Amino acid sequence: MLQSREGLRALTGRRVAVVGAGPGGLASALLLARAGVHVTLFERDAQVGGRTKTVEAPGGYRFDIGPTFFLYPQILADIFTSCGERLEDHVRLERLDPQYHLAFEGEDGVAAEIRATGDVARLAAEIARIAPDDAKNVEAFFAENRTKLRFFKPVLEQAFHRFSSMASPGMLRALPYLHPGRSVDRDLKRHFADPRVRLAFSFQTKYLGMSPFRCPSLFTILSFLEYEHGVYHPVGGCGAVSEAMAGLARRMGVDVRLNTTVERVTFAGKRASGVVVDGETFNADAVMINGDFAKVVQALVPERRRPRWSDAKIRDARLSCSTFMLYLGIEGRMPESLGHHTILLSREYERNIREITEGTLPMQPSLYVQHAGYTDGGMAPPGHTALYVLVPVPNLKSGIDWAATRASYRALVLERLKLLGLGDIEARIRYERIVDPTQWEGDFAVHEGATFNLAHDLLQMLWFRPHNRFGPGLYLVGGGTHPGSGLPVIYEGARISARLLIEELAGARAAAQAGIPETAPLAAPGEAS
Image 1 (cartoon, rainbow, N blue to C red):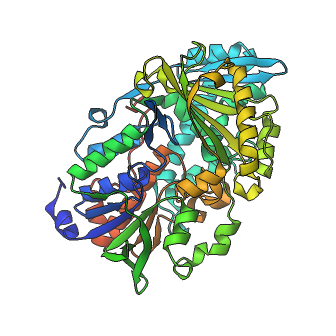
Image 2 (tube, rainbow, N blue to C red; image 1 turned 90 degrees about the vertical axis):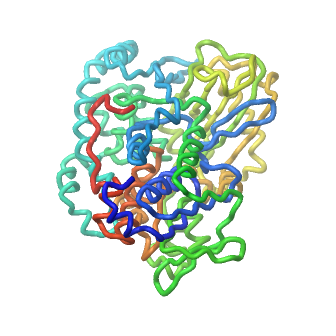
């Protein structure tokens, strides 16, 4: 219940259409319903979650489609708290330790390993096995990034729909820590001389679909967040989080309509006034769009309604990489050495990343394997294993002929898995699904198959990224808008977009009463649930 009935009265009878039940759409629906808005959530799929869903395949195998872990759950926990609920009463989150296994390829197989952990002493000991001098600097890296996060978190929580936001007090305080001329890798060289150690603190830029050799130095905070606040597995898969959000939304009165495709946004003058669904107009006081930005706004919003993001600008935008996916149901178990999350980092990692960036399909790729059954026995039937394999590859702008390449690349990936001790799995595969960049675009509506959305370079961040308030009565949420990609960042974006929408409908006071502060308090280290 709102702290004051004034804000509730201001929003009673107001109707918002939310398009897309991905993480951002679900979080926005919760916050808007909490504020007293009547929310109708339209989802074209038969299941909520977008790519953050868990699907059951023939044979009883369960797979996360996109995200496979949960990072920094405090933001979502705060959203649940604002709705009068506790996240832990709806989803069981298992903190992983080790949080992942890094395997560094050498000339004759895996040459070095790090079992990454949030226990700083153990992490330093792991690093000392391959780079003793670098191990001495782990504490300094943590201390520096703890400070960096403290200054940048308010920036990631504020809206950037006005250019003046670039000179906000929070932004000015954070500027000394920005170092725009440094990449993540270059920033890490101040602490770690061994390139393998730098990779342990920089491969996370792939969550943004970017290269650590180009990604802005700000994003060293990604690995810091993992080590400081933990990597979590939602029992039942990441889709369990989406289903819990949808269940709470329904109990709060949100009308969730599945198998429903929105055809376009309608306008009254300059203002968004509703959506067209199955040929019928659904009138609303405001519209919020959750989806792959470049794909969905071109489909739903006429070009003349988005002068800052014309078709030509979207066509020329810098995009993230894509991914080649294998979802494998395997009879039998995996070797004990294969943990929950394993990353194979190729021998020539920098060349591998350069190939992806330049549009060349790597023939010695790095890859990521999730063996969820290591932690969660419910992801496969007894005596079987569900494996999720992800290989970063160029997006569709590269022109790669995936119809001609798919089978041979599958064979290459299976060969690469032998480096992780998975040499006998092909004969034991009982279920298989491949998703390549063409399927990301065709089946999941991802523009050019760029699975991590717009690239996160400095000229596509903050004010330069698509704004949360996209126009009068029209709002965006998701990885393509500010603050960017990644589940915790998307949830933060939902708080920004919901706050702006509520302010427009009922004023800033109602937004504060709805439990959506202008800047949420910074969680102290170890405070994440």
